[in-house]
Length: 378
Image (cartoon, rainbow, N blue to C red):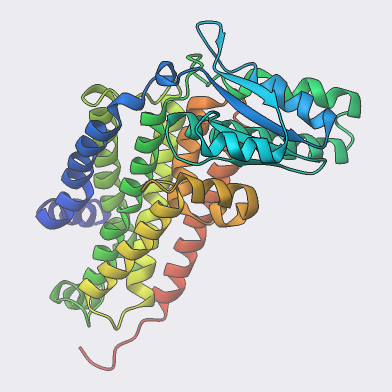
C-alpha cells in the first residue's frame, strides 16, 4: 500500500506544471541572468593591485592582520599593499579613490571602511570576515587551553584565508552569488511541502476530503506524500546544480559528496517547512500561504547576500551570527561557500547540524499538528 500511495503521489506532483516551473524552470532562468551579470567576477585576476590603509592602535594585531593581507597573491604578486596612516589621512585618500579602503585596528576589533562595492572591496570584506571568524575560533581554543598564547600568531597567519578547498586559491565571486541562488532554489522546495499539506486537509481540497475517508493511517499517507515530494524535488535540485556547473560554468569545488548531502538535507528541511506552513495556517487559502512562504524565502535570501546585500550579510556574520544560524538559505549557501573555500570543514559540519535540527523540529511540529486535526463533519 505504501508503494502505491508513493507512486500515485509522485504522478500527481509531476502533473503540477505551476510548481514545476517555480522550483525548476525559474531557477534555471534566474541562473542565466546571474551568469550574464556576474560572468566577469569569476577570477581574482580581475582585481587590480591597490593600496589599503591601516589605522591602528594595536601593533600586535596590526602585524597579524598585515601578514594575512600579504598572503593574498595573484601570480606571486601581492594584491593589497598595506600602508599605515592616520584616520584623517585615510578618510581623505578614500574619498579621493587613492585607496581601496582602510582598516581600523584596535585591541578588540577590526573594522573595514570602503566608499563603494566593487570587486576589490568585496574581496576585502571576505578576507576580514574569515579573519574575524578564525580569531573567534582561536579565542575559544585559548579559553579551553587547547592553544597557547604564543601559538596565536602562527594560527592566524595560515593561508586558509586565501586558499579554497579545491586548491585554486581564488575568490570566485561568481560562485558566491550562485551559492546564494542555490540556497534560494532549495528554499523554494517549501512549495511541495505546502502542496502536500493542502492536499491532506479536508477543508482545503477535494483530495484531502478523499484521503480523510480512506481506511489508512494518516501517518502512512503523510510519509508517502513527503517521500514523493522529496524524491522529485531532490532530483530537480541535482539537475539544476549540474546545469549550473556544466552550462553556466559555475565552480562548486571538488566536494560533491558533501554538496549533494547539503542539498538533500536542505530539500528535506524546506519541504518540512512548507508542510508546517500549511498545517499551522490551515485556515488560510493556498495562495495566501504561498505568498507567506515566498516572502519568508526572499527575506532569507536577502539576508544571505543574494541581492547585492553582501554588506548586510557581513554585518550579520560579525554582529548577529545567531541570525545567520536560523536562516535556512544562509545555512545552505554558507555550507557551499565553506566547502569551496575552506580547508577545514569544521564550520561546515556545524551548519549541517543546524540544518538537520531544523528538519527534525519541523517534522515533530507537523506531526503534532496533524495528529490533532479533527473535522465536525465531512
